[in-house]
Length: 156
Ligand SMILES: Nc1ncnc2c1ncn2[C@@H]1O[C@H](COP(=O)(O)OP(=O)(O)OP(=O)(O)O)[C@@H](O)[C@H]1O
Ligand SMILES: [Mg+2]
Image (cartoon, rainbow, N blue to C red; front, side, top):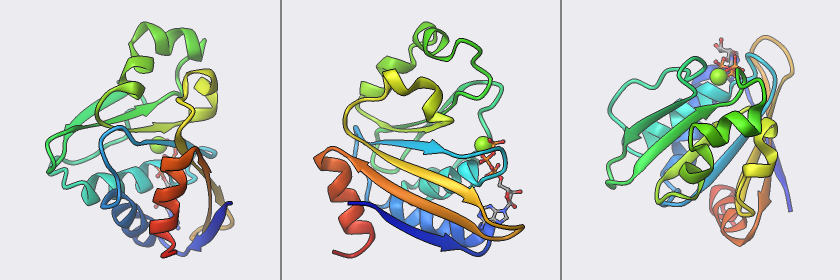
């Protein structure tokens, strides 16, 4: 089962993220895949908003992983693996593997770079720029919990 849709603006992608964020629970993992400028951080910003994060969410490109507190009390981890040169090994050295199993929500940009560290249950979202303003988002659930999230997001 997979689902896809097209957004037509940054605001629409962020709003979609917020809708998704409202469905998430502690332990959920979002694996974001897509080129530079595809909209991963924009979607993540929306997810954070949906989770009731009050702080501004910026790109964690240089810090690798940012932690926010959500309205529900669990942490939101926002990681970006673009700058990891030996991605899986470096991710291990900063403890990303443990964060992915932690009792928070985790969003990983450039998730394909740490494929081997992703938990079996995660929602994969692949973003593609179609033109200046349109982005295709393809949602592929891995595991039962991700399938449940997807069902709720698409209203099944
Ligand atoms: N439909 C859209 N959804 C999201 N962003 C869009 C859309 N249309 C245009 N944009 C623009 O695309 C860019 C997306 O930037 P963003 O930082 O979210 O990308 P990213 O995938 O996180 O890139 P990076 O790999 O560099 O972290 C922004 O400049 C945004 O304004
Ligand atoms: Mg980004």
